[in-house]
Structures are given as C-alpha cells and as structure tokens.
Amino acid sequence: MVPITEAINSGLWLYCEYEGYNEIIKFRIKINSFRKLNLSEIDNPDKIEMLDSDANLMLMEVDVVNLVKETKNSDKLVGNLILTDQDEFNFPIFSDVHLCWGSNFAKKSRLNRFFSEQLIPKIKTKGSLIFQLPDDDDAVYTIGVKNNGIVQEV
Image (cartoon, one colour):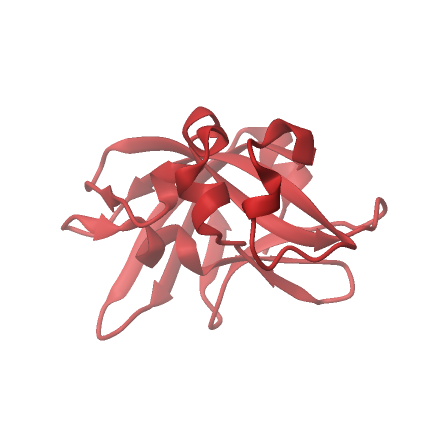
C-alpha cells in the first residue's frame, strides 16, 4: 500500500491489479489531490443517504487508465479501491446516487465520471472519488485494493 500524501507529492502513477470474476483487472491511478469536503459545497446535501454524522467526506481527485484490453465499467476498476489508516482499518469508496451522480456538485467535481461509467482502455480519464472517513486529523491513509489486490509505484 502507498501513503496518500506520498502519492500526491511524488506525482507518481500507481499500478493496481486484483482478481475479479474470472479475470484480472488492471489499471493505473494518479492521485492529484485529497481534501476534506464541506457539505456547503454540495447542492441539497440533505439528499445524501447513509452519511454518518461523525464522518468526514474526503474528495480524492484522480486520473485513471484502464489497462484491461476492453472497455470496463468504472466500478470494476476504481470501485474496489480502499483506504487504510495507521490502525489498519479499511474504508471503501463512498457511493451515493445524489452525491456521486445527480447533484451539480457531481458534475463539477467529476464524481459522476466514476459512478457506473465506461472506461475505454489506454485512455486517461479524469474524475473524483469520495470516502467517508472518521473525524481524525492525525490519521495517515494508504491506498490499496480490496481482496489482497496489488498497488505499486510505476
């Protein structure tokens, strides 16, 4: 796993691979930024479902390249990313229809690009991902892939 701040500061691409349903899923990701999201940035934040009151929403802006030889749904690629904190707790991508698809914020921040959209092989796609994380300013997060997937610097 690679620390988020290190990935941002270095500007390096990360190679990700995991075993999907009868296939190996491969992609590259570059993390451009990672910041706390203020609910006032989102239109109609009351429409966000399953948002815990003690949680922070963190926005991660990324570039992704599909390395599978055919077009894949974005959820098959980036949907299996997780963040792990220094205590080894895992946090999946937060997915909400209003926040990630229906809101104006989803379009402006490009959250909608990785919400069930097709990614063509070998073409860089810009978008954002959202994570619901504990309110812990001292937390150090690394990025990984579910089910013992591989994440390594390229």
